[in-house]
Amino acid sequence: MVMELIGSRLLAPYLGTSIFVWASLIGIILGALSLGYYLGGRLSKKNANLSFLTMIIMLAGISLVMIFLAHRDVLEWSMRLGVKNGSIVATLILFAFPSIILGIISPYAIRLKIENIEGSGKVAGNLYSLSTIGSIAGTFLAGFYLIPMFGSKDILIGLSITLFLTSLLAGRRILKIILIILTILLLNVYSLLPNGFVYEGDSEYNHIRVVKTQEVATMRNLYVLYLATETHSLIYEDSDDLFGKYHQIYRLDGLFKPEIKKALTLGGGAYVAPLDFLRRYPTAEMTVVEIDPKVTEVAKKYFRLKDDPRLKIVHDDARIFLNNNREKYDVIYGDAFASYYSIPFHLTTKESMEKIASALSDDGVFVLNVIASLDGPGSIFFQSEYLTLKQVFSQLYVFPAYYYQTENLDKAQNIVIFASNNPKAFDLNEFSKVATSNQKELLLHYWPNVITDQKAIILTDDFAPVDFYISKLLKS
Image (cartoon, rainbow, N blue to C red; front, side, top):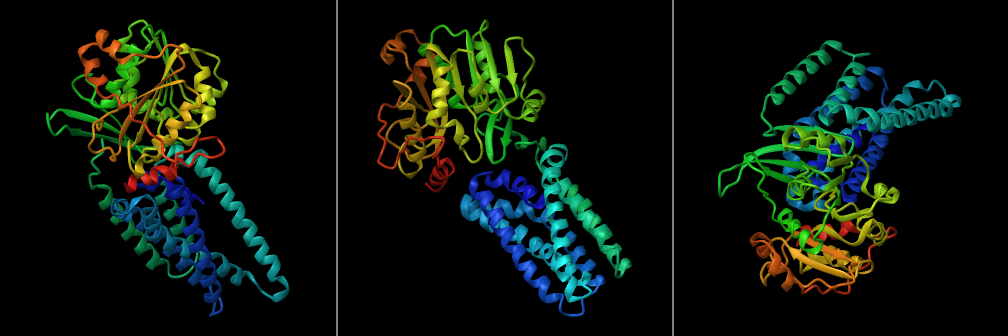
């Protein structure tokens, strides 16, 4: 169970944490364990002995080390196959063999303990009970302590060392000690190889990486925040200029809501948009709901996030926060993402939109960032989200970040939707008269041609297949 949880963290930076990744991990590891149980039963028929069992345990430890050594190359290659196929292939290559070896251990150990037929049931029951208790303990230990406290790779090596030490209980110890020493030497060589990251670590919710790179056109230094597979935020090292076009589109908020005193952002990341908001509105207050305290720590260290009396940070799930919220906000920004461009499904539904609408002031505005295409198979999530918003908000205005003319409408991009229940319809021509030069350029991104096809649905808490829709986007 620990290996399964660690597997999800190893796959996350390359293939995400979607339902496809979890289905691949659970299905393949269960299948491999089943094969291991079968092989363990067959092997136990032929002169079962403790020495052979300890060699199997040693091999299991080596197989976990091989996951550590090979996972980066395997996962980078698997990314080319897409989320579904990549998850299956990567899990097969990395986790099938270790799971088979681990599966051999239980039936082989049972055979060693059985002294007579009459006692076989008791022995099997005791060992499987002990195995299940170990799985439960490992699950809670990994989820509540090991993963939050240590990196995934450190835990993997820790499991390997535990298996190595167990294997020394019997058999040719000198041979096993030599193998352990060679393995440690190999790991030390591997650890000296550069990984290209300014920071890399795990939290309860994310695999977090920070990369320092350069913008090709200007050669200006950039810091990039990765959460799982996603490039979440980018900032310039030398200025507060906004890199992302969708962050710039947020600056239209003052046209839709001229007097903003109180705002809420769902999803902090590197806090790029909230910090820009505080610079633009010197007397306004901002509350940011970020589920992961570790992400906030990284933002403070690498992305210029500083304590500010006008900035309140709440570490909570955004939907839970909305469920318990009693405050009113002039603007709410939706910028929470999970894996592979997908918003957590429970923040996409009609019920969550109703919570957001109830948290807005009478003429407040909801600004939602989604990643999708405007047309083609990859547009189904955008169209469904738009249809869902229409059930709650009377006015919707769509601003694609990059492709908003007639070309490349089937390409993935940030699409910013402004939603409001203001009884007075907004006039974009009137906006142009009072807009700054930057806002006038951004108003040109307005895209009035939203047509939802028959495949689009209203997303609800009961049915919101966000991961499935995003898989369509990745294929387009």
